[in-house]
Image (cartoon, rainbow, N blue to C red):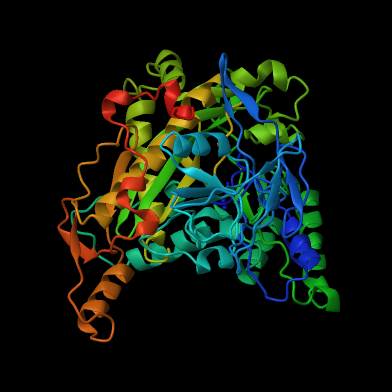
Length: 568
């Protein structure tokens, strides 16, 4: 289809460094890693741990011309692709900056936040610090109010205190954000939905209406059907396929199948991978799973260049669900589109691939458009020619993306781990073909939050700020047993869904009817206009409401510079 349905080619990737790190540390306890994060260190670092020191990046970096702020140090293990693991017992780390001065780990009542990695670190850090939060650097500490990590491990969630702490990334979001995870979820949802009458509800889309034909190569029946189908196709009739590994991103491992020779070589590769499973050294390692997908050879072009659109799905709360859509930006290639090109950067639009172009530094501002620029271009070039309604991009296209994202969410809402405090920001990539049909390419956990061009400097900070504003406001209202809606901090995000999953409802009913769970009737809050109720977490000093950052009012939008600088 984990971008990232899979990990985003544009977002930061995972490395095999996690496995090497675990072995190097000599851990006896087995841990499952589900990484979705940046693996590139930003400064000179030494491995951190008991008795070890960590060197931090430079103290300041320029955000915009004339404006500087502290650059927050990052966790080395997260940068190298390792897990953000919460472990016992708590140990005091020795942190030093480049001048050799030791940085004391903040103590006291807090509130505290932990950030593991570099993707979006400056924006999140300045958001928290402007409201008086203190950053902690020891990943072992449990007294955090907010933890934002690029990579995930089971240990990181084992000490999570539901209703008292906020945790970025739902632990099992792979059912939505990996290529195979999303594909399987949609297929299962389609099978179940086809047997259920939806009455007058919004028409459910068929997968072929928004997902290019996709087959799993780790499923024998689908794999054999794919190769059998290719054998009976003549060279002139053969279609181009794009092959993607399910667990990688940044365009890594992707290749095109343009000819029968390419398909034969791919088939041989899969056969060798299967044979190695019988090798003693490989017996307990799962081979890299692939999907093959019809390559859309007739994309809509902007000034002759291929593009896709990054939008955002925000799951601001999972108990109950509160889900939003937001516009993002347009990503274009540096070169003119050529379907016969052997250069992957002509086919993949993500910034990681485009940076390989020798002219990228000169063209980078042209590789990212705002949605307003995209809308104006379509109005000017295609409104009459294609008989489109005016403002198609901000109207019909936006509604179609929302419809597709809503269906993807509905396909997984009964599968996701629903605990008060979990939230997730997911990057969704769409392609528009020359007939103005909208295709979902993939959905990505931990989407890229870099700001290396002017459009991204306008879009990304506002996305992160409103994400945290909404998440904190909803969290605070639930803890205070208040109605969730209306939301003061809602600005650019559009509500897609609010309510409970079937699993959550069943859990609530079970708790109500089981005397051993609670002897007293749980406190309840009303969920917006739906009138649903759920047990509320009791207030706790570890995340008291007064410690939460203040919400930005509508009049404070767009955010001014002070929202990204530490308050005095």
